Image (cartoon, rainbow over all chains, first blue to last red; front, side, top):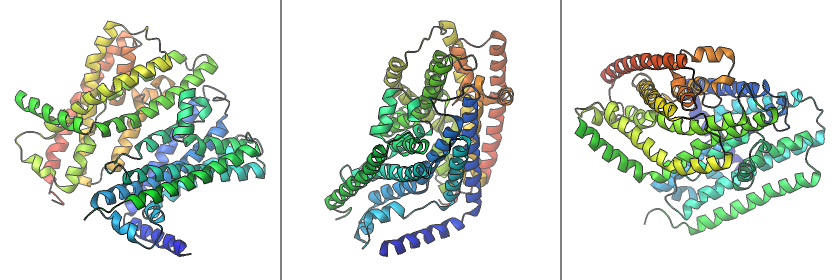
Length: 261
Length: 265
């Protein structure tokens, strides 16, 4: 409950910060809508030229866009801003103070900065998912909907865990500013279902930077393509990833000897 | 003046070389989008035979050429100058007897381009092996024709990018404007999708805008796909936009510097 109160406080701080820049928030929302317009335009160009894309129909791709936007928004709202703060705090030594606080350091580092206006993007993403499911016509059973939500959460956990490991590497290799660029770069590949890509790209986005696990896999569950053991497998992968990440973090922190003498 | 540029080159090249790890990261970051779109369109083209008259090979040659052309015509001025306007450190540059944008920033762009191109070559060759393009439309003439087109494309792109950055003199924060400008480029330059596949309205508007000079026009020149009357017309369009961009930039710079009060310095 300590952590819960901390979370609420962090959120309040971030909301206060953003209320000071209202014009900025409006502009950001406008830009977000503009990019959504572009994404939908490219989908319509693709589907004015073909009925299916690698076996996926337009409704499914709209839903995939929604899932991708959801994951991407979480990245943009939480992961990237906190990465910048973390890198800056390693460089100027304020990481020491963060680690000394009587709270879970990972929690503090992950959530001290939350970009509040992005909640708008989450709503947009959810809308896209609902619209996409409706467009694809097929009735979704409650079970596939449940496994979709669970797998989306689990997939996000996998990406979060990868992020934790990447920033934890700073404890071993101090000058590692571009630690998460590769993750950011490959996020773009999650826009389209992994089945569309050539095998070598498919391998990279499933095993190296598991973007496909967070986007294509939940979508497959929604369509009812996955057997129950596959769903359980992916959920287990999410849990395992989180465990590995927190161990790596713990190892990194115990290795850390402070910024100044 | 030539000595100044030579010195600038030496300084900027060593700076780029110093940050080569960073550069490699940005290169990988930037590579993902074209490869993703290439994969998507070739899948569609293979399923359908052709898309809007373009075959899978057309897409492969288009995107592989795009990688090179994009490196040659893109510019990074906003990352070099915006923060200096915002925190006042531009004052130091303004004290020097040379134009900071047309010397230092320009050469920085060129050095970045050169190093990126060198790093790109092996990756491009690997991609060529993976996608097996058929470049039979490319001739010596088409390559030679593309050289002035690329130079023109970069010149216009650089001046427009610098103009956008200089809006910071008035508004301090330029991020939103720059993103909007980037969206226009994406829409009208054939960056994500060849212009042939865009809706008719977009194609018509693109004929008059400078953005296709950055990507689509040089790519089509290299691939030998531009009919002669369009070649002449687009070169004239390029020269016209170069003139316009130059005039706009000079106006924005002169008036921006007058307003500059070195807030933060």
